Image 1 (cartoon, rainbow, N blue to C red):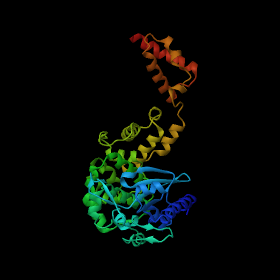
Image 2: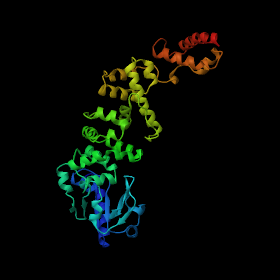
Image 3: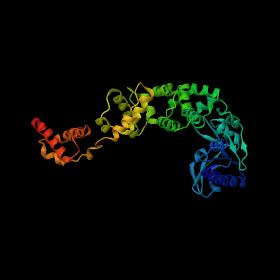
Image 4: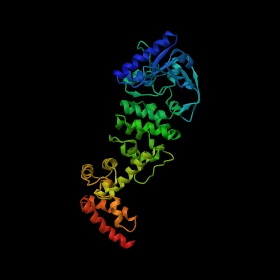
Length: 394
């Protein structure tokens, strides 16, 4: 157990003890108990109790009503925040994501049965005794992810649980239990009903998990492409791969070569949209054109290497990584600001001020192609020659 987890455990137990001493039940629940069972560090602790939100607020000095409507009060101890939530029963789910309302309960089982998977329905008391009502420990030992009760109901309630199951496969290297897997396949199109911002956030987490090959195979097996046809291309290419991609690469691979990102559907940031489209364009460029200094100059090195990696791993294309790195390393200039000449030096040479930009472009290309050196006198002489030709036109 790492130092942070020891601190969480220590301060979390202070909350359990105070609740217990005041006559309430209280348990660590969910991911913390699962991770502790697996002997891996966890970054937070959730606490479930039969105390009502107002009663929790009265017991502790430093609290925030972060989700009081749903029974959650955050209790702060020594700069650590613990979500303390009253046992609850979810009412009818809406939008395949959230319950319309919750009722508070005095029964721990009511709270545990509403959770997603058996391994996440464990509870631990102040003495470290684990309460396991749904054979979660057995499933952990079998390395199985199993939905609680009826898997079809679980995914119909909250379709995001499909992506959470994939993320846990990636994190833990577990398999999906047979009936749970069939329910995921059956309900995969419900992912279309969720806000794409939430889908993107979950995909970003999924793509960072260590067991990435299992993730790709599972995505293919449950046919996520049926929910997101613009990602079918990436899923079909990655299904047998262990090549790690970023969220931008994942989308670029799915959209390449001719599908444009639907920015009304996929709410990426402006930078991410540009990144995805640039990867696609550079993939096209690398297939069509021979590498040259001017191409290197006009395009970002990192994205050029991303495009090269996608092409070399998933298309008939010879890897040019070493060549690309070498060409960037030996570029004579990386920006027009690196020229030993400015627009002020060129302006007196031309009749039309618009010619200055054209001359600078020609100078950049000449320096990059080593036709002239980046020395002010040479640049001026070359600029005069170009200016004379342009002045004849204007």
